[in-house]
Length: 77
Image: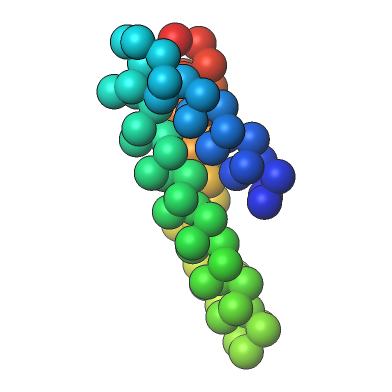
């Protein structure tokens, strides 16, 4: 996941400097930052509570799915 987030962030940052793509790239950069933060927090919580990952899996996967879809839309733009 870390590599995917880095890839998405790098591409969105590159698009942020292109005319006409700033409005699309900025939310992707923000979402990638949020996914990175949530991933780190979930990993920390999972070390103390084995059930934390299972309890958070549906919202986490939805968030990750939104990142993947927004990345694909940005690539298509």
